[in-house]
Image 1 (cartoon, helix red, strand yellow):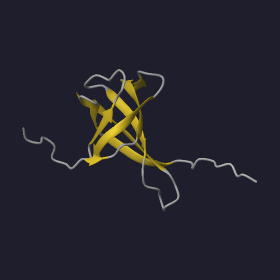
Image 2 (cartoon, one colour):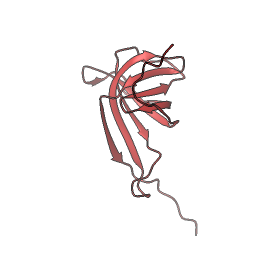
Image 3 (cartoon, helix red, strand yellow):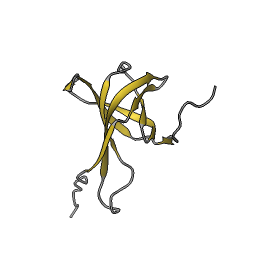
Length: 112
């Protein structure tokens, strides 16, 4: 079987927070937490250990990016798209919109 994807996929195992949407409204009030399997410019593969969203479901997701902005500021990649297929591990979604946001660094307590 030949590879269907025209873009390179990059293995990246990071925590993914996602939730389903229906007609612009959150279908689930809270985010589910899973792990990414790989990512491409227009797609994200997510491992799910519980119930999975159905094909065509709208998804919003966020990933803590492994690279720091200017070497100091944590980034978060936020994406939205649709589930295009269920996989053995979870689901694959399109990335129709994306943005990087800065995240506050974790507060570290100083020990005196």
